[in-house]
Image (cartoon, rainbow over all chains, first blue to last red; front, side, top):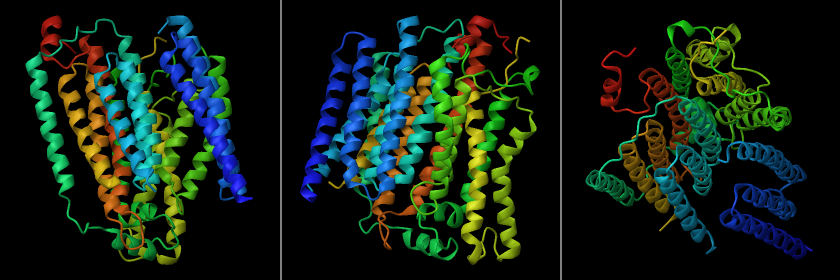
Length: 95
Length: 316
Length: 112
């Protein structure tokens, strides 16, 4: 039973790390700022979400697990808003 | 575990790499972004050094608020017209500076390698102070800040007020009393307003939680106050509210409240418990939390005022 | 090499980089950035002293860590004053530089 939870954590965290890797490769290799923004959102949403999911079985209490989810939701919120802001700045000034 | 030293080496390499990028970037904006990333990586290093309170402060104040300050400064500087052509120093000068920097760095490195081997430590005295005066405080850093070294912390709050006065006095004479320039010049933009409306209440709650739980777990007044300050700055950046006029009563009371309560508690300690800044042992924890609450208020008022800058003359 | 020594050497290297940037960059804000880099390197050295002072049941020495927390906030306050001064100086002299020859060369000696 315990080993099954460990296996689940390993699988989820590995999947999350893969998305982080994909996002980083996209950040480095994509030609345009807008496409790089698209790659970064994958790392933010899916990568962090899977890592948080993998850490939930190892949390101390239900409250700690809830805090992990709240962290993910906050990152989603700020990531989404800043992507909009960066997109608008790019569309206006091509910085 | 043989994995942790690899993590340490990778972290050290990343920190130095991002620091080199910050120094050698072409544009100011890239350099500031590099500095913010560097601050976050440094927070990881602090965690590896068993210093979660310092990691929180570094991430919040050292990299977050300083980043906002520098980006705002860069934007205001870029709005000025003639920027002088930057005279790049010659190669010989660069070489000499590099040699000097390498000498300083290696002298420091030699000192670190030659640190005394049974390491000296103030931990026993701090533990005694935490048990005695800060009775019931589970976080030794809060005990040190508020009871063992309370004079240092109070003086540091006064330094913050002096910094605010210094920033305000840089404004022109005609502008004294008016409000600093808004943090964003344009009209409110919907995603930013959405972020401010969603994030500010949650952030304020988290800030108060971090302050309250700092008595027993990593956290404390500085981290909570910095987070509260950030929430106010987010609402100012969304143009939901503007920087207040610097002669408003509530702003000045909020700024002074923290150090004033701290000083009064210290003087009262002289009367009640026999020494300057001594707390009566049974009431130590409530008094410390009371002082810290006002410190949070002062920090949350001071940091955004430092970022907003001196009062500016409005065209109206 | 323990993590503390590695972090300490990183701090020493950061002080070196910060000093290099502080002396070389002509732009005042870049100088301020390099100065902050130096400051955080010094704080890191404080941190390893704190880590090495583990005794009396703690895994760290809380006094240097409390000093670093105070130091980070004071460094930010100093940066804020420096930024205000740089902005006012640039607005008055019309040039973004700390070189006095550029100011007097353009204004002919009368500034504020």
